[in-house]
Structures are given as C-alpha cells and as structure tokens.
Amino acid sequence: MLKSWLARQKGAFGLPVLAAGIYSIVAYLYHIPLEPVLYTFILVGAAAAAYAALSFSRYARHCREIEQLLPAAEEAEPTLPETSDRLEGDYQQMLHLVCENRAALAASAEARRHEMLDYYTLWAHQIKTPIAAMHLLLQAYPDGTDGELDAELFKIEQYVEMVLSYLRLGGETNDFVLRREPLDDILHAAVRKFARLFVLKRITLEYRDTGMMVLTDAKWMRFLVEQILSNALKYTPRGGNITLRVENNTLVIADNGIGIRAEDLPRIFEKGFTGYNGRKDQKATGLGLYLCSQTAKKLNVSLAAASTPGKGTKLRIGLCTESPEYE
Image: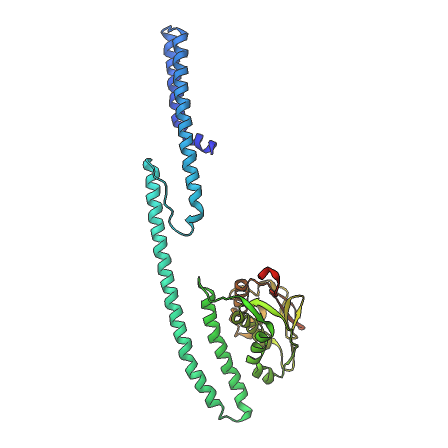
C-alpha cells in the first residue's frame, strides 16, 4: 500500500524538492547565511511530513473501504465511498454505468431463459398427449410388431424428459430437496421404467436389494440412475448383462457392452461430447452423461467411469449414507 501511495505522489514530492534546490542555489549566489536557509528547510520538511502522513492515512482508509466492498461487488453494485477527486469520480460514474448495463443484460437473459423454460415446459406437457394416444393405438398391434414401436416411443419420452431436466439444471433455482431415502425404492423405480427394454433386448439384470438409506433427492437420484441405465441399455448388445450393486458406499452400474475407448474416457462428461461410439451410432446427443455429471454436482456426490473396449463400462456413484453428521 505504501509503495502504491508513493507512486501516486511522485509529482507532489518532486515539486518541493525542485523548489528547495532552486532556493538553495539562489541563497548560495546571494550569500544568504546558512542558518535561515536550514531553518526554512526544517519548517518546510515538517509541513511536508505532516501533509504526507495525513495524505497516506486518507489513502489507506480509502483503500480499506474499497477492499471491504469487493466481496459484494459480484452480486450487486457496491456503494462506493464519497470522493472529492474529479478523476476518481469519473471512474465511479463509469463503474455505475457498467453495473447498470450488466444488470440490464442479466435481467434480459433471465427473462429469455424463463420464456424458453415456459415454452419447453408447455411443449413437453402438450407432447405427452399424442404420446399417450400412440401408446393406446399400439395396443391394437400384433405382439410381433408392437414391441419395437413401443421401444421407440419410449425413447421419445426419454428425450422429452431430458429437455426439461437440461433446462432445470441450468437454472439458478431448482427443486433439490435432500432427505433420507431408501436406495432400493429409487433403484426399483428406475429399473421398472426400463423393464420393457430389458425384455425386448433380452438383457439380464443382476440386482439384489441393498437395504440402505441414503441422503439424497429421490427424484434427481432416480434421474441420474435412469440416464446411466439408458446408456448401458443402448450400448449393451442383445443378450448382454447389466449389474447394479453397492461397494463401499458406492453404487456401481456395470454392463458388458461395447465399452469406451481410453482416449474418450476423460471427456465423456463434457457437454456435447459423443466420442467414437457416438459418432459411430450417429444418434448420440452428448448430453446424457453431461446431465449425469451436473446432477451429481447438485447432489454433491462423486461420479466416475471406468471402461474397457469390448468388455464393458462401470459407472460409480458415491452415496451419502445415514450417519450422525447429518443429524
């Protein structure tokens, strides 16, 4: 702080030094006695020291006031201390205009986001009507054809839910409510949702009740499990195997599908990344596992993946179990 203050006072200190030098030269040329010259220098030096102390005290107090305002500056426009300095006043006015512009842009962006959320929410509710109608119409088809059509219709429902989840996760507010929930209830609901696909693809499910209670939001934890199960079913061939088990307070969802290449594995949770499998499939959006990672962050749980091409993939979800720290 002292160094910064001295840099600002170069001109203020330079002028008295120059004046003292000129006065010394004049006194020497006119043979003025040394005693009044020294006395003058002492008086001027004392006045300069008093001025410097007062100036530095004001500068230091002003800096501390600004530093105290910094933490709140990210949330709202700070109320800056009054100043008599014209240049600093201009800077404060410019900062005020910038903050007003930022607030206007933020309000406009939030309004557009709400408008988009309202539109897609309305769209999602409206699209459910024809989906339900198609389900009823498919019941009239012979058993040999309705399975595949029903599976494709189920995918449409999944994509609709993905749209809404994507919008909710990107908002500043959400409906996350942490409670102690039976893990088995969440897993049963997720598996039941995909039961038809398990049967259609003849994929075996290995799962035993865990009897665990976990601290989580049941709806969003179910969404997380469903997205992983959806990926596992997508990339596991007919007649394959999917396993749900708990190891050391970690939920493991494993399959014996096509696996993920080593070079793609570090990026699978990135938004829009599809990797080799996605490009080969031509239908991947790159959003499923991204939504999983965002949901895991909201739930404050870990999410990790391990995979071997041709042998399968394992997704691990950390679990917050019932313990005294959550009392």
